[in-house]
Amino acid sequence: SREAAPAGRSAALRARMEERLLGARFRYINQQLYTSTSREAARLFQSDPEAFEIYHRGFAQQVERWPENPVHRIIRYLRRRPASLVVADFGCGDCKIASSVKNKVHSFDLVPLSPLVTVCDMAKVPLAAESVDVAVFCLALMGTNLQEILEEANRVLKQGGILMVAEVASRFEDIRAFVNSMAQLGFKSVSK
Image 1 (spheres, rainbow, N blue to C red):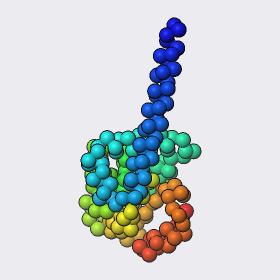
Image 2 (cartoon, rainbow, N blue to C red):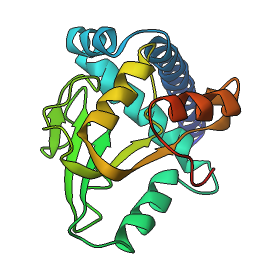
Image 3 (tube, rainbow, N blue to C red):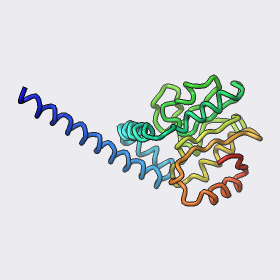
């Protein structure tokens, strides 16, 4: 039993070190995503498929520590609306929205974590113009070509459609400037 204690401590230490390493790799990949175009991000994950899994594991660990996961607010919002609304989920990850609502949800991401995912560049989704009622970016506004990505959301949204953006405040240097740039793309802010 004296030998069991060191082995137990060794396993616990190893688990903590692996978690720290995962956290560091997540932060590195996250930084890569924020400082590259969506096309470059797609190439990163194509060349290193394990990176996407590591990124999403780290992402999930981070979100678990928050008081509320913003995707749950979006799901509640959609459940209170007609199921006939068509939704485009940009950067859908594990397809939480598609698996939680009755609406038709087009789920887009760079790598398929679910069979529901359509793999594509967020700046070029395979949807017709004015084909969706709601476009969602839940913790998914990444890349240096954000204007291109938001223009794509605008292209697929029906006239009078709703763009839902849930993002951490630290993502924006100036929220007012972001809201103003959204207005220049034709969007109107109804809630912050």
